[in-house]
Length: 191
Image (cartoon, rainbow, N blue to C red; front, side, top):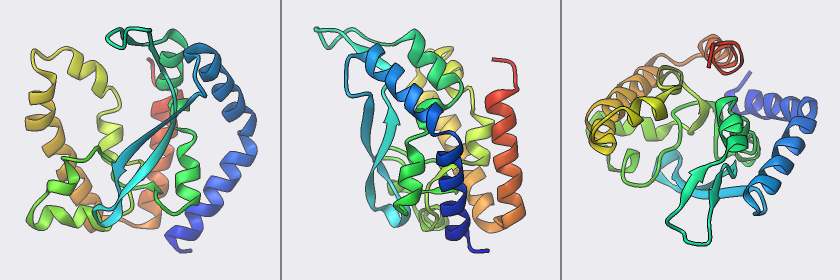
C-alpha cells in the first residue's frame, strides 16, 4: 500500500467517523472566538514549498489586538488536538501526510543546510516522533527565561535530528506505530 493511498483512506475514514466531532469542535470555536472558527497560516511544505495549513481557532483577540489569549475552550481543543482536525483536509489535498515532520513556520525547515534538507523531501505530517516527544512543548517553553532561544538552540535541533532519523528509517509499520502512540498520548496520557 502506498503512503498516499493510506493517507487518503485514513483521512476519509477519520472524517466520516468523526465528522460530528469536527462539526462540534468547529461550532465551539466559532462561538468561543467570535470568528469563523478557522485559522489559516502559511507553513513550509514538501520541497520547501509554502502551503496554507488549516486549524480551528483557539485564540481570543480583544478589540485591542495586544490582549491575545488562549480561551478555556481553545485550551481543551488544543489538549486533545481537536484544533488539528481540519488538517485532514490538507492531507486529502496532498499537502500533508498522516505521518511526517510537523510543518513549521517559514524561517526554520526552509533554512536547513546539507543533509538536514532531506527532511524537506518528506510531506509534512499530522504527527511524528518529534511531535510525540514534544507533545508538551508549550508548557516546556513557558518555563524558559527565553522561549525563542530555547526553541532555536535545544528543541528545534532535536526535532531536526528526530525527523532525519525518520527520513532514513520510515516504513509502513513504523508509521502505524507512530499513529498508535499519538492516539495514546493525545487521549489517554494524563494531562
